[in-house]
Length: 164
Figure 1 (cartoon, helix red, strand yellow):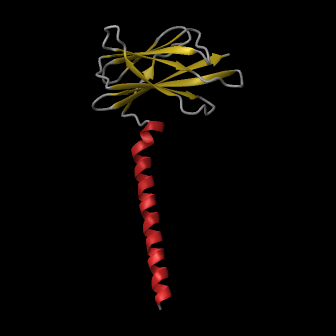
Figure 2: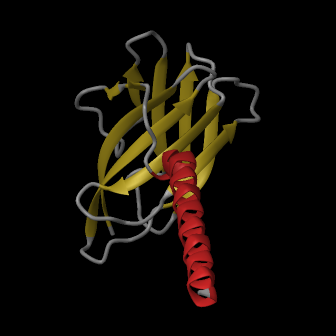
């Protein structure tokens, strides 16, 4: 009779440990999922026909405000340091990031946080970044600007191609 009580105690502890592990995994996944898959409260749309290879591209937001993305040098190269600039007019940005994703190919996690430009403008955010190279010779990219305000997360996708 003593053996069955010991086995019952061990299986109960094992079940409890598995439940705690599953709850912990679910909590961590829920808490940190916006890092990999940002959820937008508002999605903007880049100006039709704008080409980041030629110039900065603006996007007007439905609730007012404007976001403009610029990447230099132009044409945009792979494996070279780029300057990524976002101008956020008419909104109070708390944090701005740009996520670079391959449109048809997973290129891993390529996100950079921009910092307020020290040149005296309070609406300009910038960072240095280098795009990875695609062995196929060129790549279709989606640069998603992610703007966090005190009340919402705004995303604006911009599409462009690179060749190397």
